[in-house]
Length: 477
Image 1: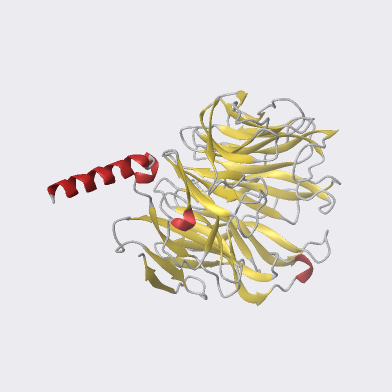
Image 2 (image 1 turned 180 degrees about the vertical axis):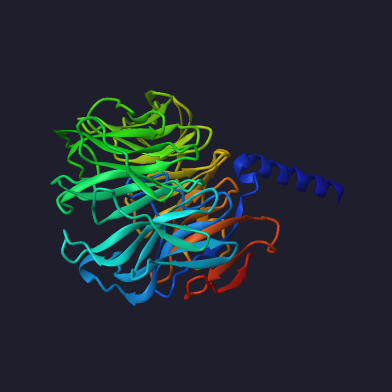
């Protein structure tokens, strides 16, 4: 008997030694919260598709801001607020309570774009008026939600009918862009559709300030503001044509940093006529992407007046910077040899690149967010294009995990894209319900040792402004 036990222990030991160390480590486990909707099919997060890649919709208090469909059809079918043409309202989710933030008086739909460390929320709302310069288009106004109320931020002092809030800090300083009334065929907001200039603004203490432009440029957009009050955004730099920039922006494009003391400063480029800032931290470090005239994209880091290529390669020529943490570590992507495939990457410092890999040998992945612990989230793509099979991932301590495997079995959502991770390790993203509708989700770290704090939670399908209806189900197995 003793001999048999010894042989058994020896066999188990050999099997254990054959298992890679990272698989022996305890996998993280999460409580899945389906944020739900206000009775319509879908809910949304600011995903950075407008270039605001490092947007903050989830803060370190665990408060999430987004917007969700109601069951009411959009009354402006020619200019639907969302692609599915339902009225939608901004929401705040905190500590199990989803709150309908409503819209401006006489307005219909609203959207939350950014939440500050203190819980202030910046976004947009329709105001019930029609833009006289674009027949049929509902006017949008930049708004700020604080202390349970909504504040309209107005438009530029010299006129205009549209404004859009991109970001807010804990002081209540809001930045974004607004349209004036100066004719412009290359308006940055939507070239060829919008017919007047787009201008970057800073709103504080009830006043909206035009921040100006770089060089001889006519248009600018403010995308970020940090707790110091530094503002980062984009500006046309001249009327020279540009064919390499994304978002169909047709003129030479640069990025700026602005503060009260120095005004607007050009971040410079790595070469070419396209430099797009994609993130800003509280230390004033800016990240972004530079596209050369031969359309080679390289991620950059700007710090204290100096712009540098993030450097490194995982085989290909191109890199992109998507998110930066308070330590200046950067998450993004890089191409492999041949330029057809790309992987999520981490730069712990300039020149030091780490390939984060993909889930289950997918050919492609990209990173969306990085926290203070260098935990990184994003998406892994089996077909290298974003589709229903795309999977949200978490990378930590050298290992990449499909987030769908870290939540209760039989979950109500397929976790498609992880947009944000905060310093508490909470993760927000978008998933697909059984009908392939997009729902926002929140993952809260739980214990891998038992079901007591690991379950799925559902927000109620309908809620009135200021109210929420939650129910729970499905303990972790």
